Picture 1: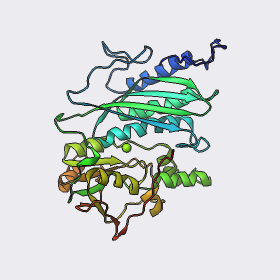
Picture 2: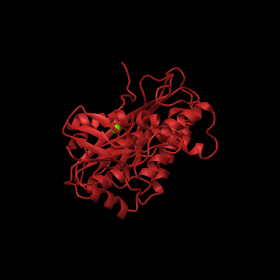
Picture 3: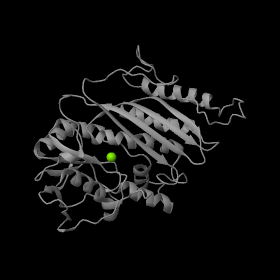
Picture 4: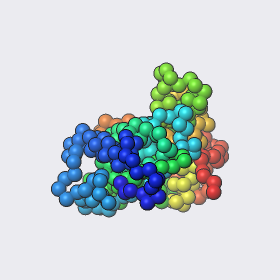
Length: 333
Ligand SMILES: [Mg+2]
């Protein structure tokens, strides 16, 4: 965690909110998260984690390094009236990890940078990020802190390919006409949870489960890795919504899309499942659907749900015989 050169140079007095005191408490938090796994809780010989100018880590596999980064901005990606700071920290790291999942990669290391207004409980935010790191098997090895008029959390993750390193990462462009399409779970839960949170009716089950899908999405790392190892041709995670993200995959692959149906989470609407976004389930294309389903079954994982197939006609997008709605989130600049 570097010291910024634009800090409040006129107020050097240290206190509990002092940058370096916060960094030390976050370091302890992140190393404790690493200690709960089989990986050592402090850096192995030769590695450097939080506290130096840069982190140093050893290779975790002989194959390529997979990198992803994401931003969570209060008021744009997250509503602080509806989500606690530990949820924000959790989600900020999980959305980057979801991009690793979509490549079929395992998560190894993360950098977490936070820009926050005075008085923000950075330890609570860090605790959420530490939970996400722990659940995903990655270690937070650095980051940065800054003051800011609005909360911004930037996460960067580093992953690798386990198993056969000669097996390429899953990319969006690998789908072929005739490939079957699957999704790793029913959709619309995050959008439904957001709706219920805004309406103020999400405290009790089963609605609280939907709120959790919005506040604490889970990166499908095991599913992505298994898909890569069992013959999948392409994948993408659903951040912007099924309708938007399946178009991203189809455009990259030069195929059309025929969807036979959309699996909808209980309590969500069909519209939320098609366009809501932030489900962070994976869309998987494969020419060997039986092999994919069998691999999930024998791993004891939820079977992937059939969505439809890819066609030879780029630009074709149908759902149950009708045009697939447009929609999905995009930033405008
Ligand atoms: Mg993505």
